[in-house]
Image (cartoon, rainbow, N blue to C red; front, side, top):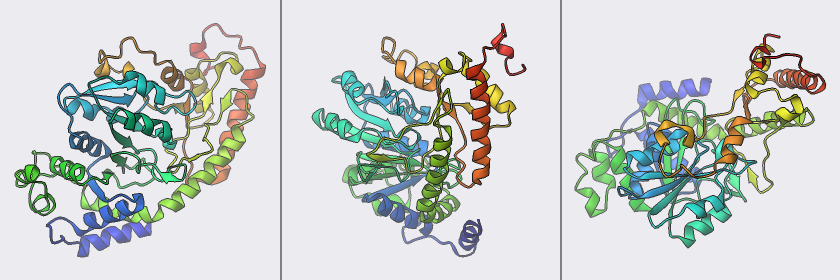
Length: 391
């Protein structure tokens, strides 16, 4: 947009450092984002993954500590646990939202459990009331991965306001897009300073902002990491933060329209949104596929047919973490992850259409109706479903 272009050009001409020797625009965005989230501190990083790494370091994980994490999430929710020498212990998801099951959290707590990380998957908030009860009862730390959920609310409160630390991705696929960046928020000064120490290479920012004696001794060097946000990304994020409410409204308008159009089509069920939450950024639109209503056609073949119709349809997201080699044999061998496996194997991924004309959405609805109606009414006379899309 012209607004973004003007902001970048203005920074290129007039951008300068603040009195702490880092870009003024970084400080400005951090203050604005902290204000938006109603948290005391915000720290920008070069990616959402780096913000999660800083969060896990900040809560003080020791080797062998366990952190409970959802198995149905992007792997970067949990890989920083490994990088901090702790152990991710995976938990199954709710069948309808894909979010971590609160009772599953409680079942997996041991005397080694230090923290819980949750993902508000596809923008739908987790059941924070139940989760917070468990966190308080067992004196655990809570980290929110809000990378899908900018602006989402649970009973009127924004996600990212419940945990000890909350992390957001600002990658280009997110509704608050800065090219590539991340940001964490917290109300606890010691957590902010520890996160800053692990994210910055040292220098005047650390000298000005570290106040805790045991941390100040490292202010010249940090711990060797340099995860700072690029100032251009901070410029873009600052502009887009002002537009976030508008983008969320556009996305709701388009995806509610899509859900209405799909709701009576056989074999397809729009994603649910519980009454006490809002989806905010609504990252990704994930309807469910029911092959039993469509002559048991495999989801992969259904996707091929939709692609042949010119539709951008894929299988949903990433495999559950327990199915990935990196997380194999991490105390997850005998755990039942049936909900996560079913959710992954039966959900589709569609565009979010935020800035598109509704006529394009109508074409998608028409294609789904055409294909699904045919599949539901006709027995497929074919021996090998691997060639169904060709037929």
